[in-house]
Length: 55
Image (tube, rainbow, N blue to C red):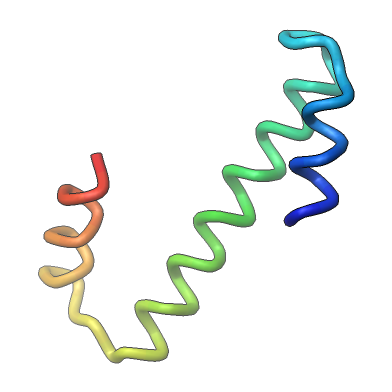
């Protein structure tokens, strides 16, 4: 994740590579969130509360 952020900052904003890195970051963030939710055994209702709070 840190390498992706470093690469992102070295790219021209809104270029194809920059957008690809942004997409990869979002995908990894979502995967991390899912793993944490599983780790803590959160219900779908609790997950919805958490995600609403993050907006």
